[in-house]
Image 1 (cartoon, rainbow, N blue to C red):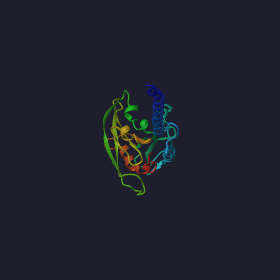
Image 2: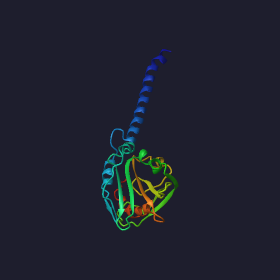
Image 3: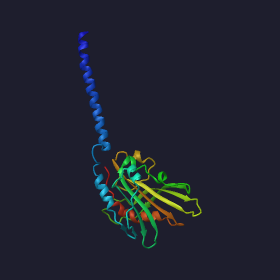
Image 4: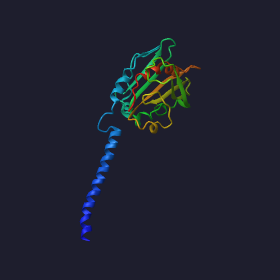
Length: 227
C-alpha cells in the first residue's frame, strides 16, 4: 500500500509534463501555421513584386493607383499588399477596374463581389466559371495558357439600366482558379492572391474578359509562388 502511494506523486508529475509538452507542440504548430510570431516567409517579397505591376500593359494603361478604404484594408489584412487601378484601352476606350491583393489565405480567398457589391439598384443575375485562354508570349513565364475564373453579373434596375460584370479568382502562384471552397483547397498555403476585374458590359462585348485575355500573361510575371 505504501509503495503505491509513493508512486502517485511521480506518476502525477509525469502526466503533467506530458500534457505540457503536448500543449507546447500544438502551440508551436499553430504559431508556425498562422505566423503568429513572425511575418510569413515570402509575403514581403510578394507584396513588393505585386506593386511593381506596370501601369501600361499592351494597349491598356492606368494613370494612378487607388487606395482602398482603411476599413477594407484592415479587414482583409492587406496593408502594402494590393493594387487597385482603372485601366483604359487606348484603341477602344474601354475601361476596367482591377484589384489584386495578396495576404493571409483564410481572409483573402473568401472575399468576393457578392459580399461587398450590390444595393437597392443592383440585382445579382448569374454566376458561373469562365475559362480565360491566351497565348503564352514569354516561355519563361509561370503562366498557364488557361485560367478558370468566376464571373458574376449585377443588373442595374434603375432607369439607367446596364450590367456590371465581375471576374475573380484565387492564385497561389500558378494560374488562377475558381473554387467553391477556396479556404479548404488552399488552406495549406499561408498566403494567397485574389484578383477581381470589374467592367460594364456593352452589348456582346465582354470588356473584362478582353482585359484578362490581354493582360493575364503580364500579370502572372508579378505573382510569386506562395508558401
